[in-house]
Each structure stands twice: as C-alpha cells, then as structure tokens.
Image (cartoon, rainbow, N blue to C red; front, side, top):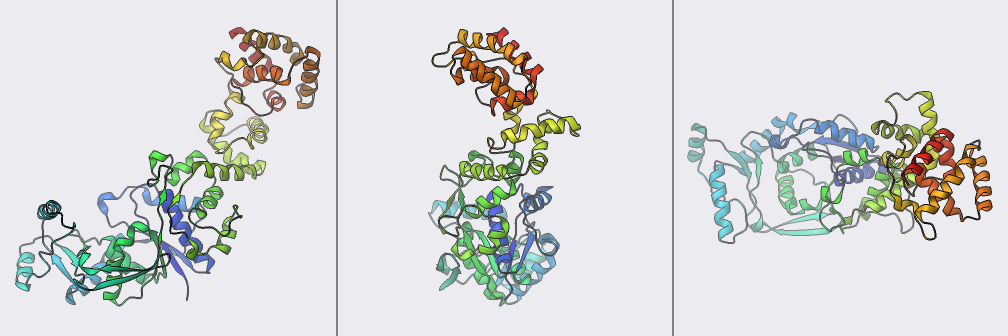
Length: 476
C-alpha cells in the first residue's frame, strides 16, 4: 500500500510553527515509506480568508525543505463535489436541512447554558416533514445541511498514538456539513477530500480528537475506508500554555526574519515529541526521512524552548562555509544599513573579514545587527562604568589608553604585530592583561563584549582605532 499523507492548512494568516511541525511529521512519514505528500488549502471559511496567506504557507514550507507532490488542491474549487456528497446523505436520510436562524441558534445556546446543558443544537429541524421542508425552500429560507448522528450506541475510534477511544453517541452534536453560503465545513470537506485523494494517514492536532467520532461516522456513512488518524500533542510555550506570540516568535515567517536556519528549525521540530534514541541530537532532513517512525511520537505535549532552538541554530551557523555564511548574513548587514543592497567588492571583503570573528558568538543571523554595529559605526557615547573594574578606576583606564596610543600608532595592525606589541606593552607597564585589553575594547566597541581584540583592531584598522581611542579619552 502506498503511504499518502497531506498537510491541509487554512489560509487565515502566517503558518504557525506548530503547523510546520505537523507538516514535517506528515512529510517525513510519507517519504520514509517512499509515499506521497500533498498540500491541500482548506479555504472554505471565506470570512477568515487572508490575502497572501497561501503564498506565505508555500514559501514557509519550501524554505523548510518540505515540497509537495502533484498540484496544490484548493477546497474552494471543489464545491460541487461536496454538494453532491451532501445531497447523497440527504437522499439517504443521513443528513437534513436546518432552517434555524442565527438569532434562534443564539437563543438556544444561551438557554442551554442557563440550564447547564451541554452546548449544541437542539435538533429542531431534524424531523421536519417533507411538506415543511418544501415550504421553507419555496419561501427562499436559507438553510444549512446537518449530519444526523446516531442518537444511541457508541462510536469506536482509533488513534495511532492512543489506541481505541470510545464515544457515547448521545453526547454528539448534529454538526453542520454545508453552510448556508454553499461552502462545506471542515468536517465535511476533509472526509470527501481525504477519500478522493486516497490519504492513508491523517496527522493533525489533538484538539480534533473530540471531533473524531463524527468524522468516523461520516466515513462509514459514505462507505469510505478510514485513514489512520494520528493526533499530535500540542506545542506549549514555556508558560505551559499553547505557544503564542506572548512566548516570542510563533509564526514561521517570524523565525525566518529572526535569522533561524531551516536546518535548525527542522532538526529541533522533529525532536519536539519524537526521538530516535536518547543520544542523537543532530539530524538533517535525509537522516530524518531514513529514521522517522510516526508511531514513536509521544502523546505528551512538547514544550517549545527558544534557548534550545538557539543552540541548534548556533550549531548550524558554526558549520556554514564562509561563502554560505556570507550569503545568509548579507541581508542583515543590508537591513542595518551597514552596506548598500549591492555591496562593493571592498564591502564584501570587509564583511568576510568580520564573519569568522562572529561565527562562534551569534545564535541568530539577526544578532548581526547589534553585534556588528561597532565594525561600521564608531561609539558615540560611552558608559563610564564599563571602563571600571576591580583594581582599575576610571583614571587608571584613562592613563592606560593614553600610554597605549603611541604603541598602536607604531603598529602595522596585523593580528600578529598587534599581539606582540600589546603584550610587550603589558609586560613593560606591569599590567594585568584585562587591565590593558578591556579599556581598549570598550573604547573601540562601546561595550565589554567583542570578538578577539587583535582580530577586531586589525579589521577596523589603524586610523579608525586611533580615532576611537581619542574620542573615548575626550569623554573620560
């Protein structure tokens, strides 16, 4: 049997990182089994449709290395298929037209709530006579089509991760299949589509478990083969609640903008709820396809750790070649206005001198904007506290900078020459290394933190170094 999976997002905004994990698991399972992975856009809720969302979803998936087989399927282009299926259920008296107005449904909802009854429709239209139905239609009354769920017995469902789950039919609602605008609900459309596309495995969030019985009932009513359902645990923020903007970036677009690499995102997401063993932490897409087993996904909710993701991203940044690092880093230098959109050969060379110095120090490409500022812009103001340390007051730092100026003015400004001259100066002045290097670093960079001092001075150059030290001295 060919394994066929799908990712079926709604175009209501940016793709959520949890949605990307669902897509990834579906993709990995299909490719692990030499099967097919499909992209289906569930765009039947026109009130929530967001222009540009489809392109955003496609871009996010392709960025992550997830491509789909065959053409994208749009539910809005298949309305006749859903209507035909609904008419079949009407003819077989497995569904019915509901003419209740929105105002009546709201009154019913409030009344049931006041009487502490389960929410849901009261089935007023379930047993209308043919004459009553015909009269409503003749009057042009709008209606929806609802499923006639069995009122007795139970529906037995199976989830790959949780096993058998039983639902008392008396607790189920007569869900809407076709809305008054002629568009299907998710319940109806996904059953028809999954059967039509011969989907074998459905991965979706565990919030859909409560809807599984009506979906199973629909599959059975149509005589369709049931797919294997895999309800994935929700991705939580570190607060313990569902991951959202309150926790930080939550859409794939935000992670891309922040400078996360697709390799890091995929590696980390794959391990959010799945693991191969207790030791292996690094997986590329090829290895994931080879090893992934969807039955080993945990039932427990996974907590999204930005710190852990940063570790993965840092790992992959450190393994980039200089050319690849330059290609990925350049947009951030441009965004910060450090260089123009088309850098000159000199600017490219300058950036390529900087990159090896920061490659082990940043965790996101967007860190470049703040971390590399001093390479392009001289500090305007200094925090005098940065010049002070145990055993070294502000006056002492000023004296050291004044004495080191001639040493730097007479240096060739290669890394080797700078190191030799500064270490001779330290020995001659009987200084501790940090008492010499820290004031210089603060004067050049505007902070206590920078790449290696000799490398930094060599990149910035003699003239700019002397200028910055003199500027710092004028402010101390």
